[in-house]
Length: 253
Image 1 (cartoon, rainbow, N blue to C red):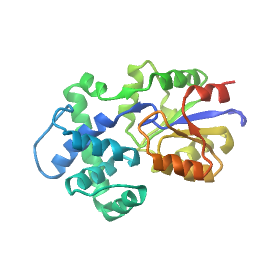
Image 2: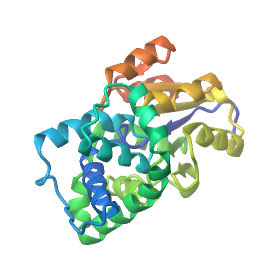
Image 3: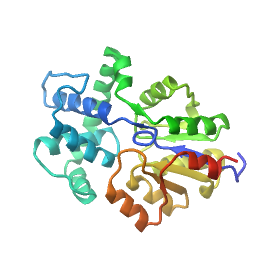
Image 4: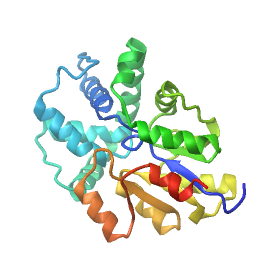
């Protein structure tokens, strides 16, 4: 790999598609199973407006499937997650429950796919312009994905939109614990310099460490976002990316 080559690394949830609906269905089913109840749903009909508002407002803070435990428990216990400090405190307090919940979450997600994969795919709302941008960089073998989502889900959704990415350029939750780890692996495997690796994410907490380590990062604003994240990005001088096509203008040569 030529050191001056720009590599473009996308997060998935919230960047490539809005998966809030699918995550809400999977999280609810995982919660029911964790509470030893046999209820199961595969659509949005059972959710009240109050549940949807709560879930959509907090979901952008989630870092990995296990943390949907925080959303479920906070909702059912009536805890208001008003900022990142509150969310992080709950993540510490409930740490012992988060990892076991992750495996339940992935199990019920697989159950949803097996039951009706077409319905499962429809729960994801892909950003068409982002897919076009990804195609551009994928055709040049410059596209990577670093996600705390599972590989199979990502591949199914991308394949459904005609985007086939090679195995070695998709790092998922089974391979990485953080986005910094993912970027360090890409750097090591390609020989590309930090400032030539461009990382795009919708969660500011995933961008602070990479930025501090010399990677070029952007916070996206086209999906569900939190004003607190925008404020933190401005504070740390992390640029806001409003349109994925800007990546082609900047790095597509």
